[in-house]
Picture 1 (cartoon, one colour):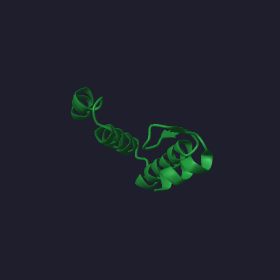
Picture 2 (cartoon, helix red, strand yellow):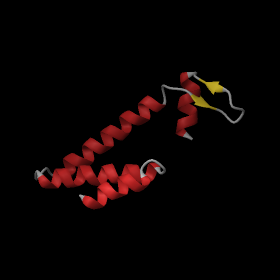
Picture 3 (cartoon, one colour):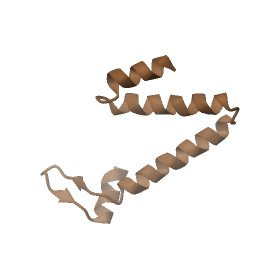
Length: 81
């Protein structure tokens, strides 16, 4: 636990990958502590990431020219690249 806390305190505000790894490890260790099968943890994680992807496709993004694009099909095309 102390490794995760020091990782969060040092790097999480700077690096999204380390933030993600930290919380994935946290989910894994909590599941292990309560004897939850790893399959359930992976199913939850994949469903969560699918939901995040779905939300990303229904918001906006800035294109190369700095223009805010809000059209749903353009967002889908952008995030599926």
